[in-house]
Image (tube, rainbow, N blue to C red; front, side, top):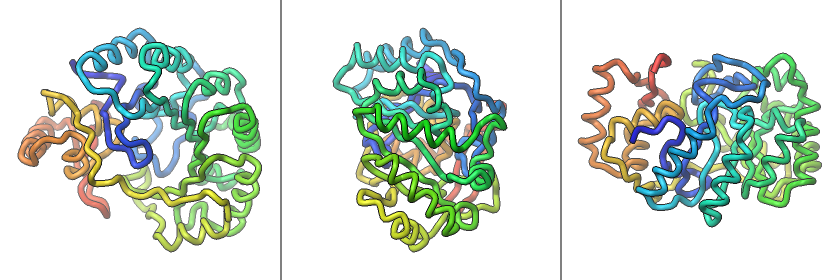
Length: 314
């Protein structure tokens, strides 16, 4: 079976073996972040609706569960903002009913936290990872390029309210880009908000895969350590690269289809694909060559190697 709405499992830097669920189509989002690995947003919106049908998602989940081992987490992420799908809460409930022992994570850009309905749906997850890259209006516009109706103070207040309501794990992610959102005034504003939110963990991230702008660069280790020192939060860390010993153990016969499913949402190097798919290097090479000849994927050279991603018409 070729999956359209679930992908992986992939070895996650934060969650072990994670099966992804994508509740929007490429690329519907409320932000157009300059660092997004999924590419430019093609539909910038704050409208909640059933972008991907609930029935289609659970059909794929049921088939996956019948043919594969359980992952550590089922994670809502992918091509755009998962909370834009109005059936998010229903999918979480379905997972909890069928597989209550599997943890559910939601990676979100936080833009809909001002909506009480969204916050209520997220209460059902075991882990919520909201992102907050800037607190000032200018900084927010510079790095996240939001829908024009979004107001950063309402976004921040939404996270603060959710942190008071939520009993699960809350990890706040901050994405740092040199010269974009790492000025001292930007970091001090973040420091004050983080203190108010008081998440279980703060994770500092930077560029690893190609972003939407070619001239942006990742922050260095020393840059990120300076940010940590300035914020001064007790439980704060730099997100390390994925442990090379983690193997996803994906059980797929159609490697070609699996590659497409993965890199459509997350550009990968051949090394990344080897780790995710657990097949021989020659198998990866052959399928990559075939997909390139068919003009279904393209490779882009970056600091860490050649990243393969689907062509946008795919």
